[in-house]
Length: 638
Image (cartoon, rainbow, N blue to C red; front, side):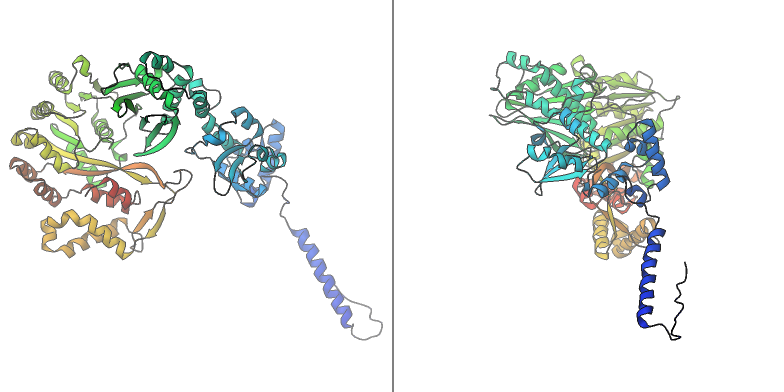
């Protein structure tokens, strides 16, 4: 940058040490000044400047966004999100850096803090831009887009004077989404927008009603009607499969729980005085006998008559101790079938399944417990076979998934429309393919076998544990083993295991972990000839296959474990994946059926021909990083 030179020493001698030291200090001072002048870093002027520091956007882009917001009279945050596609988490981190507090992202599954919100109306918290979200050991957590403003006003300290306050920041949009979650979306119908806690507080905790007339009167109460609608709407929004209403005797509150991804979670509790009216209201919605409390009843709610959603609910009431009634509602959201390729089948199972169901006639079963996805799988199979050249009849109870091209019949026992009756009618209706919702009795099963032997492709579901056990169950119903073995094409057993969320953590599997996995995988294989001849060689062959198929470039197999994040509500799991056991009816297996062989013998035959059990399929899903062994063991007995 330049040179400093000492000149004009009048004594004709070298400069003194003091003069040299002085020049050095002068140079250091100038260097600092020049360095400060050269710095291009902007001074922090706005709460979004951290976006530039984090290289989310350039300084020029932020300046442009600021001018655009000023010109349009819009909020800068909206301009950044809508015009510059800045993600909400990036804005949240910038705000956290500016205000010096933690960023709290929006969590759609956040539990509403009813006690904290009891005396806070939506208009008040929306205008003041703060809301309590949790009461932790560390203190009361307050969410706000502007912590400095709220701190200086001291409103929160006055309202929650006994609490230590912890402020967390979020963008305005996430704050609005949190208010919508707690209080209901603004601008919607009453039943959809009402705050569930306000509804509960409006239900006075009076004496428990006993007379039918009083219960009907209470069931027609506007607040209770809105509460029931709100429960159903919330359940649908949260992706819930079942709603459980569980009353308790005395003055204990009635508990309402939701089942999501196979697990129950608490939702709300309602006053004891409304336990009978809420059941009566649900009975009215599905045309049940409101005076009958000593027998179980079944019904269906077409919710579009009562609320904004076009969904149906299958309702079951069951008398419980103390003269009470439990209610369980299954949400039947009409949906499109999932393509077969996206159902989570392994390549081998998918290839064999497609080849089996492509045959012109025969009998194919999908088995598993309630809620294991049997109907979904059957409809995916039918979707692959649904062509203009094919006539497909289905008998279902209830019709959950609709497809164009299928002629679907809903069972109605009161009208005499049962599975055997409909099956007999189908045989006179020129079918190519018949699908029966469930073969629960000998008559339906025998008609199905007869139909498959007369040139029709028949699909059905069964409530059994495994593919081989299904054969014994059907033979125990009195089926002729020769006709049944001739008709059978295959049996698919299915379970649903929880899927790992994207926040999962992976690590290279140790020798001990691989050994344990291999032992579980080979547990059922020990009785087949290949394993009896040389168990170690057979195990090594399986392990080599795993490394080739699932190993990385270094030959390591990676295993994943649940972590937990905002998306999965800290559980580590999001959604579910199917585990499959596909039994193909080969000649050797048909011989076993005709000889009334035991389950163990049939299993050895099937495994020897390449079938994978539910647990083996689960282990392969673990190796793919889709789930973990804890979830596989939860749904698979062996």
